[in-house]
Length: 354
Image (cartoon, rainbow, N blue to C red):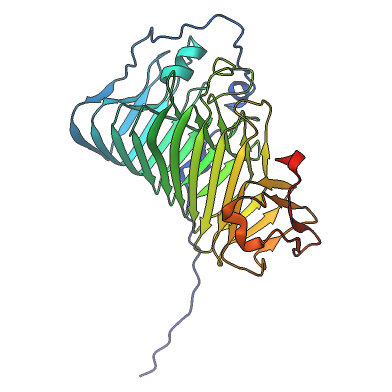
């Protein structure tokens, strides 16, 4: 008895839901620019409404397709003290906003609006928004958005407080891809808020090359309503098991704390945008010994810590990393200047740079 066996090969293609996004169809929307040249109404004039609203409740959505296409309407609204778990779901938003200030202050027209101590857990979910609508808008103290194994296709994720600066909010991503197409849009935008974000095994693609913006608002410097307030943002972002390319930008005395661990890689730089606010922007960067940073420009850091005391995990690209020699967090550098791979240096900042 002769047994013959054959060897064969197979190709398996793994597709991401955002691979099918029609970028050409969105080109006209992506070209739109915001016009803030009108008097804002600083109180809420439009109710945040949508076909799927959950108030003061705990509930679950699974294996569903949720859509909305009406102007000034969200798809999913979680307005107050609710806990919602969403899985294996597609959320699709079309339709413009009639008032940019209402959208900015209160999340009018966002695909998902989470507010006022509510929590949303999203897994294996695809959120796609068109016509300039925000994708996910988190508002108010202790509001949480926890996202894993999902895809977001939009103008970016926003954490923002209007009026008095709020604190305690989070937006977290695990095994997720975030694609942001506007030319000036950041992947994560923190405005007038003290908040945090955790990124685990996550990929971010931005047209702008900006990963994080912290400012007194969540939109461009052309939006200056909070310019004279003390509403700077303080953002703490922790990244693990991820490789990200892009920059950190802070305006008007805002703070970005950027911590890397568990074999993560970052290619980018940190720099201050326009404005003076409460002083120049403040950056704190922390790497563990397994993570790497490839600089694409000079960086001025208030605090810098590195689990690799030899700085072997830094590739300078010929640029300089300046640090505040007075800061206690930088005591391990002892005010010294040290050479990095690529010909650049880690050196103390001058008084004029701080």
